[in-house]
Image 1 (cartoon, rainbow, N blue to C red):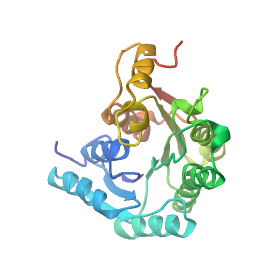
Image 2 (cartoon, one colour):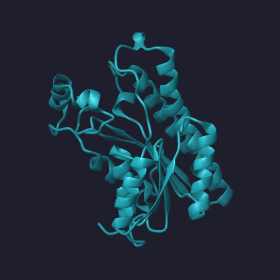
Image 3 (spheres, helix red, strand yellow):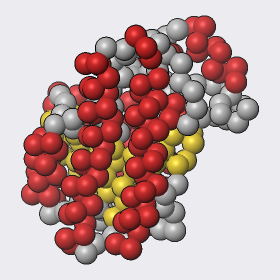
Length: 257
C-alpha cells in the first residue's frame, strides 16, 4: 500500500470531509495511494488521526483537521488551513453527512430537518464555493466530487428528509458543472446504494430491510466503502478530464428495476 507522486493523483492536494471512517476514510486512503496529499476533515480529531496514521505509515501524506462543515466560519478555516499546509487545493470531496431522523417524513421535528439540510446541503455548497473561488483565483483546473445517494434519485421511505438533501446535491452538481466548466473545474457526484458503514447501520443492522434491498440488487450483496473509493479516484483524476456534471450510481444494480 505504498503511495507515490507517480500515481493517478500524483502532485494533487485533496480535501476530503467525513474522512474519519467509512466511505470518506476509504476515499482518503485510496487517493493517498494514488499520490495525492490529503487533508482529512471531520467533526472529531481522534478518528481522523487514526486514518492519517494509516496513510503516513503507508508512505503517504495526510493532515487531519477538525471541522463542523455545517458552520460557515469552520468551513472557511478548514480551507485556509489546508492551503496554509499544502499551498493549494486541487480536489474537494464532499462526503460528511448526517441523517438524524429515521422514520416517516411527517414525523420529523424541525430541529432534525434543519440539521440535515445544514450539513448535507449548506455544508456541501459552502465548501464547494470556497474551493471553487480558490481555484478561480489560481486560474487552476480542479475537481469537485460530492457523495450523494441513490436515496436522492428515488423514493426514500423512512429516510425522506435525507433523500431530499441528496437530491439537492445532485441538482447542485449539475448546475455547477455548467457554471464552472469554463474555469476548467469539473463537478461530479457519486450515488452509492447500501454500503456497510456505521452511518448506514439503521439499514444494514435491520435484517428485514437489508434482505429486501439485497434481493433487489443484481449482484446480490451490500457494498463496502472501497467499492466507492475507486470511483472517486477515477472521477477526480485526469483520466476523467472529459467528465463533468455526471452522477455515478454505485449500487450493485439496486435501482435498475
